[in-house]
Length: 408
Ligand code: ADP
Image (tube, rainbow, N blue to C red; front, side, top):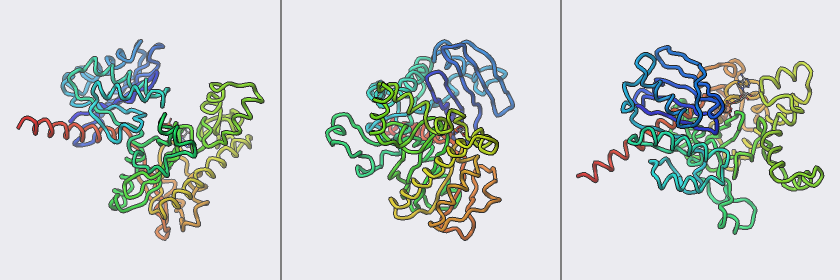
């Protein structure tokens, strides 16, 4: 099956076409600056590479642009639209309603719209992307793959806050956890790489990108995730604050005469390593260069980041009563060997030792712990698009089976 994977944001839309049998990426690209001017980037496995300005006033125009390119006689990878069997959409927040991937129907869109309040920056943009595809390809099966679904196995003791229970009942205020698509892919890839049965191992996945989260995956199921009701909780991130005492926020609001939306702006956009480094940068590469040369706050920001990751790893090892695999992934996790070393230095008490040479290996999957280490430490490149394509193909196959059952 040819799966078109769509990840739609407010002004950009990423896409990939993946052959679900070979898992080969046939084409991939990005529609940026939708509604502004429009920049289109496109690459295929056959060596086509394009970056050009194409006006894209709406998401529907962006989807039109990418579909036209996919069926282009010279640069395309498909004869016509019917060559695309399924579209898999990355959907950020499925609330408690969605515990797995689903065929997108009108009812699913209604249920997703009800979750908009839970992820106001992401869900409406996702729905716009879905509607644009449905408009242009009304007969193609669409599958929704939720970032919250893999985390839905958390028990109440992990997902409830110490707030009055009525707020959970009334508004579903609880921990949802995010980056589920990546946590699922990476935890399973780690087990596969090590020749383990994922249902028999305890894995901690450190997804360390601009947005960062950690999950505890016990016997194939998430038991905890550091992100919460929103993707603001947990680790110190690029620009997000992570865990903070709510009392400090009231204090700050009073001192600076700020309202809630101003406070949220500070917590989401002006905090994290950017804020700690006195606005120097949210990018770990720049922070590292600056730390060496002149900016001591850049070093402090990296230090706080590593310390926080180590604290979460320690607490998740306790939550699972042990850990077999610790996996680093995403921009920082995959690329910053110094941060990995710093984090692992805190974890010596778990019997972890790192091979310095392997820690600098750039492979898709590599074990960086030594043979004598009591815990396997790995670096695995995440692949959310492939995970979405796998989910979409599985749902499509299931759909075919149930349709043929109904017809017999
Ligand atoms: P997101 O998907 O949340 O935007 P990514 O997973 O793409 O984030 O990670 C982006 C971050 O990864 C960048 O902000 C940068 O700090 C970090 N990063 C990328 N490459 C490197 C590198 N070679 N060394 C250190 N950090 C890196």
